[in-house]
Length: 95
Length: 150
Image (cartoon, rainbow over all chains, first blue to last red; front, side, top):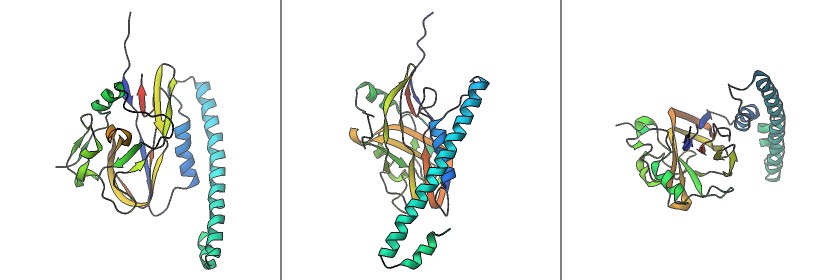
């Protein structure tokens, strides 16, 4: 029997919004792992478990590095504030 | 009349693909995403029959509070095969320090006279207030990628 199933198809994009602040490292890591790792509902349970474990490892690594990126960027901003003669603004970045 | 947006791949885009008018190779700064207004703030109908960015007209968000008309460039990922399916995707796109309400988006090709590539409905109004608004694309595989040829 011949089959000709196929075609040009469109996936589903999702949106996220946060108000009064920017995204946290945890939120961005969640978006990233969703983009990188997709676990099919029809996969074998063992494969699903392995994929979930891998996903959690990736998420933890990403959160760690994203937090470091935020901290490093704050260091850059602190130096810019001081260089510009506004050391009092440094307190705004200390959390 | 309210804005009507249906997630669809424009028919014109399918024809243009067969004519070889769209090149998704590498981060080639040619595809853009523009945002529609809130449902109640617009009046047009967008979906498979949408052919060009110019049709958004007054239904596009105005330039203000974090959004600039014509939208932002997408970073495209060079098409690959997953099994027997060809696919491409884009990197997530973020509007920072923004305040607006949007109900959908249009992906269009600035390298082909702003022809429409995809109409995306957000399933309702999405609001951001003094914050960040991000579009995430699905996993780039044969069953989920944003643009696929199976």
